[in-house]
Image (cartoon, rainbow, N blue to C red; front, side, top):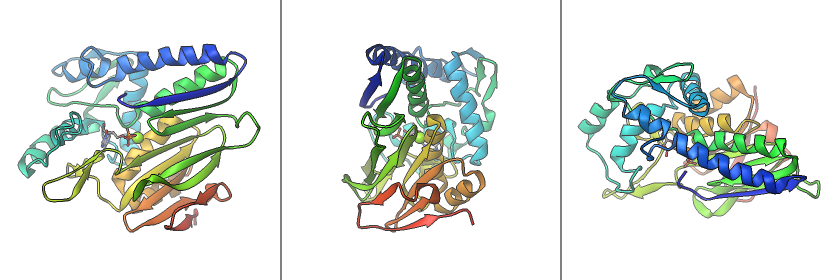
Length: 306
Ligand code: ADP
Ligand code: MG
């Protein structure tokens, strides 16, 4: 998954749990990678419009991509991959594409054209998908399941900075998870005290380049125009029980922007979030009151349901 991972597990069979988790991560990478040529995702992308049989994991992720695509009105769109590739985010050979290129690539973007029936996936011939927005959250969920099945009562994993936890710390206190300051990524923005939850962040500082025009361009694309999403937010952290949901929403709400993110939370509300706006303001949801500590110089406010 092109990132660093760390795992800590405490409990009766924690060594076995860690071993099994490692195998499961490799299996998921083999199924979901967009660069490995024989992964499910690569086979879907090179099928020329034909049906492709995929693993249960891939089917779950394709279904989630469809569901969150719909729920977020297309702010999450896993078919945006060819646009992402044109910007160079898949290879590191970054450049600002010309507008006509983006326009023509956007003709082959639209999550609603993915079809899934059982374990059979089909996308139109010119389409390409990638699960980069969701895969780490799902992987974390699968590791948490393995941990629980193997007697782990306390555990924490970091998949490229995405945190997922089981129970509390071995000493009985809550896990203290820091969120990075998008304006100064070596420093912390806030500390969250959590247990049994995932904390998943999407930010404009994670993968970006500076163009010839001196502006920064980052790896979350607004499917409406094919440019890096610039809708008021510099980072979105989602806190919830389901890693897949948290990962999908961190990317989707970053893409959707401040106002739509607030509205989405008010309408769904089965999670908490910390938004950081481009004018250096933190908005966090009221479920975090008491477990949120602002350690930055930024101003903050609590978002409530009314
Ligand atoms: P990270 O993987 O850096 O932690 P995210 O979970 O936010 O961050 O996922 C970003 C990845 O999602 C990108 O690298 C790309 O593969 C994919 N992506 C970018 N924009 C979108 C989008 N609008 N919808 C779906 N996937 C996207
Ligand atoms: Mg994500």
